[in-house]
Length: 383
Image (cartoon, rainbow, N blue to C red; front, side, top):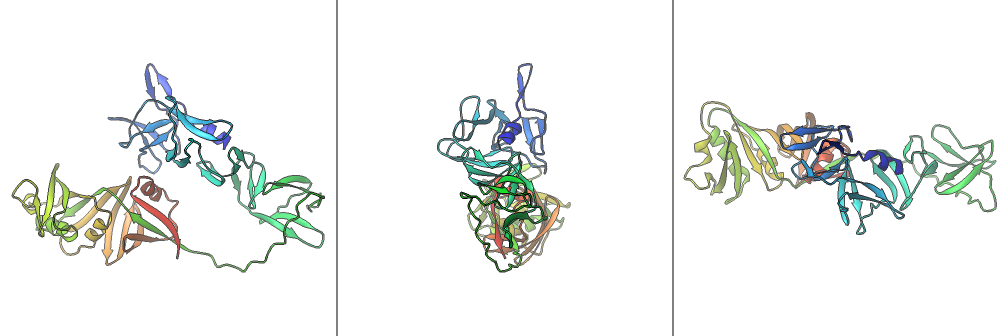
């Protein structure tokens, strides 16, 4: 942990009198200098916002505008994250270089037991006391303080004595090593040297064999997003009106963008009228060519689910952008939905206010982008 935190914090460069982010890539992404200033492009193509990257703060619009830079610091108690103005996060969660940290009321990053950073899994016995070159829960924590050795170990006992062996067949011998915080000495045959003060391992209980568990991923959406719909030449204005009327209640307003102009429309007893005029949206979206219209969604993703379940006229839901993820190729049949997220196909089921996908997807980049931006919560649930 100490080495990691010292290494992941890239400093800023001063070119003349202009402060710019480091050109080095962090967390697999890269800095981009756009029209609005510097922003950070993640490895999956999304952009970082409302977080620290390389010690630079990116605002809600994704641009770096806060000139004080931040870095990890450590005192006698624990780690904290402080910028050059003296400010530090306290009593809050904060994303830093792609990892979410919780800071307590005193501003210290809290984590005990197994913890995760971009460098991998590490183990904290107490604040500032990290496992190193020892076994914890059967996992070997190497000298760099991270778990990287895959085989898992456990205690065994035969007629001679106790020994500690992992699933590859390796066992400790002619050494003293820490196991779960206690030092044990093993002889040249690999057996535990039992001293007067050596805790003796308990006899391992024989556990019944468990069948491998399988999981689903449950999304609970809560988004502000927009969707681009494609309408066929014939009757497209009526198609759009039918679409909007299908999932908006009486009096509900939406923003509709067409030909570069945005209209605020309202459901007026089933007719979609343009606020401030005597026209309906069907009067505006009309012509002889295939049209694309962008519609806002501000009452959770259930609006969109209803929209893509609308059948009959037009070709709906060409693509949806939300939470840094592009959704496309929607197809719905009742509660069954298929779609693509950033180009990869998925099948899902609508279960009330939840969207359920097969398998544990919580580690995938597009899922983490949704949860990070607050678009949805994602939970791994046993089938």
